[in-house]
Image (spheres, rainbow, N blue to C red):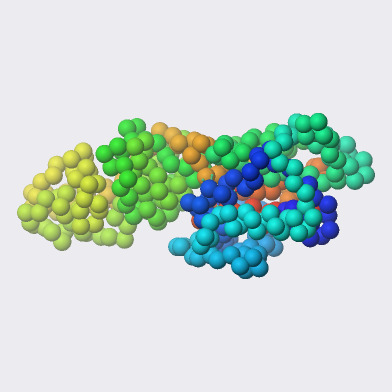
Length: 372
Ligand SMILES: Cc1cc2nc3c(=O)[nH]c(=O)nc-3n(C[C@H](O)[C@H](O)[C@H](O)COP(=O)(O)OP(=O)(O)OC[C@H]3O[C@@H](n4cnc5c(N)ncnc54)[C@H](O)[C@@H]3O)c2cc1C
């Protein structure tokens, strides 16, 4: 997107990537249908040390702007839920679109080559930055770093952007995997594959979505979302009966087993597991009203302390990155090193699940391309 917007201004652009196949993450995103944006994008959907930093770029290149490109290329999309826009066909459509737009503006591609070093000579007119790529040296007045985060290394991820920021003396905030499944002491092998609608809460943030039990712990949208707010040692609270009140009292007093009563509101396998592992599975009439209220309260405030996460290999994003204090929110240019820009996931701006991360990549890329 940066190459396109710089190219449209008549800039000469070289796009360098060490991967041979470009856009590896777009390819695998959204289950192969790229959740390319969200209709309801706002600064509140992003995590950053400076929560206002992303506002400017998001307002200058909006979801309507990326939709405009899709329309121009006759690419169909659809809303799935919560404003999430997915391609109808495959991620390939948007990759081909970006490539074609780049080529139309005259951008050149250099792929499958390692960047060995970057040199900077301030004041060397129009050639301040020199990038050594294997046996080639390429100089330019602007250098835009769009190397993304650390997740899913098979897609070409590398710590290059963070290292380069440090080489230039720029701060990088603490990095951790985000939008990632969590692990628990014994996992949930008996419940693996079962999902429950829940409200997951951690560090004053809540997400109402589905959770999924896995062999190693928990996943599903509710958990992926809350994982970005989780720090080691924090409990995660789960409301497993969101919006429901006094459900067990409806069956009181009666002969129905507790697990059967719970199975009216929760997956049967989970209800049985819950009663087997944490309670006795007796007839509802054998409990007092207070005990039933307590059981329900526990299901509304089911607390787990994760042992960790599945790490960068399984994460969708890296939380943290090049500090927003170092960059202009208008242009994404380094305040200390004019001509050096950082865009996309390498910056300390991390979106929620639901198309927000691609929108940040498009928006920040667009603004950098308007200034580089
Ligand atoms: C499985 C998965 C699914 C996802 N699904 C979605 C989704 O549906 N919607 C959404 O909004 N977000 C999604 N994301 C997140 C989204 O893919 C990223 O936030 C987004 O791609 C970031 O864009 P970027 O351009 O900053 O970095 P990237 O897309 O990661 O691109 C970085 C590029 O830099 C190259 N590179 C890295 N190191 C070097 C180096 N040393 N030298 C040269 N080149 C280098 C890489 O090869 C890569 O091509 C998903 C992520 C994953 C892992």
